Image (cartoon, rainbow, N blue to C red; front, side, top):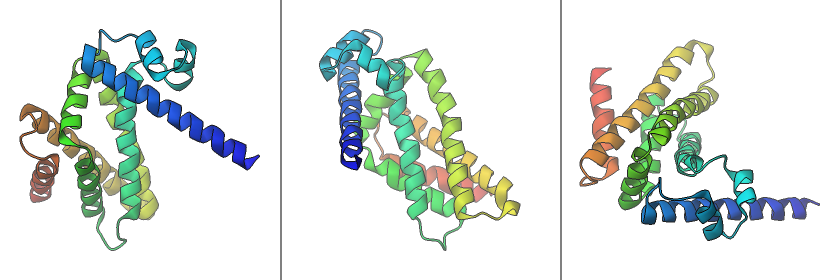
Length: 193
């Protein structure tokens, strides 16, 4: 029974990845607005009805990339050495995770997200979810209730730093690595604290 559950979960992950890859490829080729759900489903080799088992809308394909980033940040934070202060631990986690994403992919995905006002609005809302996830991870590492306000501020500032860095990255057309922009933003933050 465990083997079947493992196989089922693996097939689900593979189908999810196929849908995501097909959607991103079609968004890049045709544009976000011009791409239909039927085209995404056909390219992923699934029925339109199956698409809705994985995503509620095509917006969610783009947003899943951002939520995936939040999960990676939490995992990187959990692996950080225990002797680091929260802001330093989160800074290292953010830089490590964002540096893994190829610059060209980051530019394309960011432009796709900016091409739709609906996606932009939902992207802004997802920053709040990422902040909450980081805050929960910080509280898990530093459970002292007296630190709660400070840890929440660290999570908020980390997400703000990411946002500012990605805006600069997009404005500059990816001319400088996002890791450099993140370091500059965190340096500016630490200089003001």
